[in-house]
Length: 233
Image (cartoon, rainbow, N blue to C red):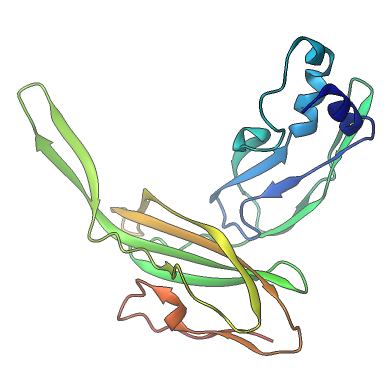
């Protein structure tokens, strides 16, 4: 990418993309707020372009995001932005994001929760949260070494299958991850668990069509879980 192209990108004030990792975080749930800083980065190094050859395209890695990990403290519908600032005579403005903070999960170490979150009149996402009981383990390897770790009763996290189709929907992109945590129950007992989290985004192709997401679209659904069809109308 040559300096003339970078100059043309910077000649017009840019709108930076502001995003939140979940449109409906829970109270004190850790989420990420990210800002695309491609244009800001290019602006900072603009005066040095003649001394170097740019060896990678702008916008091809996660390093182009300025990320802040936060936890929501107030329930209800919230918004952030537009944010704006000026650098080297160029004004930058972000988009506005809207999200809703809901109640925390109960103080339990086992459970499965599905949520349908509408993000626009044609888009929505499915959030799956799961807690699997876990126990602390200790093994004495030698006189000088002891291993400590946490082991779940199983690690079969419920999620959408790798391959499926839902009539009336496009998309299916998202992310799944797991982590370990603990809660203190009402009796003051510490309960450890492995937490699974999945968020999947969809676009509705026909707003007048009834869309149903059934249990056969998921893997690792516990046998004793009473699944209710997820319906979009």
